[in-house]
Image (cartoon, rainbow, N blue to C red; front, top):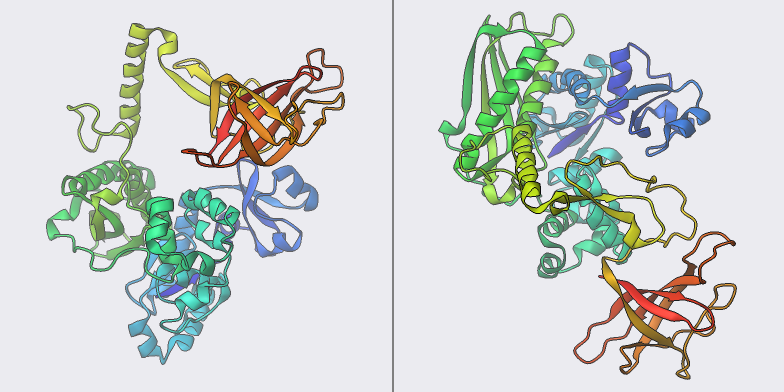
Length: 528
């Protein structure tokens, strides 16, 4: 597969939409953090994840833009059209990235290097943007090859991927961020190290997400072969009178069509992973584009891609846009997977009378009415939702808020909290702390000094006067009271690693020590 990648596409599209030039530093922000920037901005020390205030202090003349997926898709249509003049069968993965089958086109142009050179020149001449091309087996490997401008020989994708950092698995699927973080903590820092694990072990430890990531790390396809072909009746066609000539009207129709299209597939236990969007204008012009999706499409995902494609068609430059409005639209499931690959919404189907394509907002409203009804039976505290709040200890950081009450944090969670327990937080926090005793190697109680230091290294932990359980490792202590003028007893927390015992697995716990002369120890939580 050949992948064509336009670097920094959100920033490039934003600059083009504003009528600016790429020689000016520009960045796209979301939640006041940089999500994309131009090469000129990077040369001025602008980086992804940087806060807006810091970015503007580094580069006072930085042009600031917001995230706009429709804008990105609309301007990428020029790139897709330029590529389509040379090759057929292209698939838009996302704005800024497209894939094409390489075999036929490479043979026509004399080889993969010649095809790559032709595409780069074609995109630069027709769309006025820079791009990079990569060739490898599978979309994941080809995407990483495009970032390096590499042409990987057949059968050597795994060898190409092996030295790359395992953090590459997090792109573009941010849902794998937790998995990637865990792999790094386990010492699997490269794709090759992860690929060496047995597939059965990966499935047992990391589940479906881990198995998919493991296939990618091994240079295999992210989707199993021999997919079932969608029958013709799964296509959805719609005629419009009057014709669709405005993007807002097309967006309204796309929402309804997306729900119907998704419902028809769901009724047969299928979900779409490649969506073909084909249109016929009033003057008989034929338009078409195929969108490849990393995950099975939801109704909103179908509607978004139809809306983006209409924006690309109807807002193209003069001479490139259709000469008339769209009179007929057809949605074609080019590729499908079994329905078990799709995670349905929480409230879908909770009401037997609800239709399979019911709008998610209506479903959420219906769920809210059910919550209020439960509150009428059990009281306001009968239905609560968790909120991560600011605080110093794990128990106080999570607040349960009655349904319907404002979800406003008392203190910002990311603020600097003196005497706050460092990460990671315990997976389980005990509602009632468990009294214990912590002893040293001589069996004497361990306490705190006036400076909140331990009187001796902890050696064992006793519960209810039972035999001590050996402590094989510990971290801390961390003061549990802020400021030097605290009026309460001296308190500090420790993380203890308990050795395996009879019928007991190794365990990590969080303990609190209160007082200096007669210390009181309690277990507050445990770690997975």
